[in-house]
Length: 124
Picture (cartoon, rainbow, N blue to C red):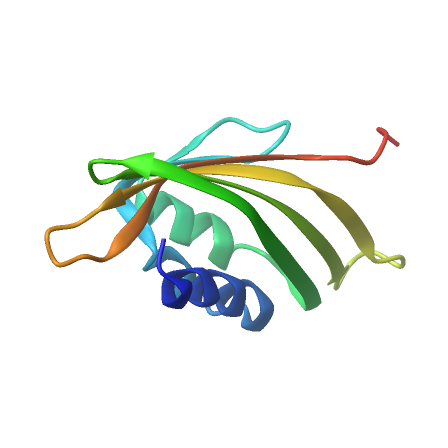
């Protein structure tokens, strides 16, 4: 994945610019949040993100390893996030790992085709 695409994802989360975030998704992306059904395609993900009511978010992730060949890459990394919700007194904090499968387009751009993540924190 290009560093520009990675930064677009991070910036999209931090600024809650959901259009910028889903722009790095393949049109038929499979986004697999923990403890929830998979969200299929870019439009469904945009709707899901737009329904969020975050007052603020702090988000960071680190790419640990990238491997691939012939236009397909796997990206493994870690993340941390703190989210303030409008209807919850305490912020939600999480840290964990993620795995993404990326596809290279004919123009050299990389898009997220599949993404899954889970927490390193114990269940509450």
